[in-house]
Length: 128
Image (cartoon, rainbow, N blue to C red; front, side, top):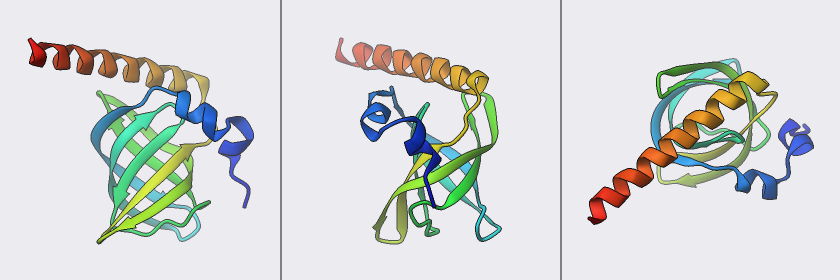
């Protein structure tokens, strides 16, 4: 199965995207197995997310994600699994968004920048 993400953006380009650490509940739908389950997004960028779940999701599995980030609901975003690492009972999974529309991409990018700036200000205050 071809990963749509790789057609648009190389892994090097992906790592240039600003990402922020989060702890967001996420509803995951495994398209191939018609199965829903939950996980936690641990970081987010406009290219995708890293998340933790107890369910196994092999690389190239098409999924959809529904989550709320800073009061904005992202519903049924198409994505592919691009990385999977098992640690104890948990799966650490790298997810690349597929076909994120420009409006959602801009909203997500703006919110990531706001959260990043807010986090930097909080760190600066801690050092004073």
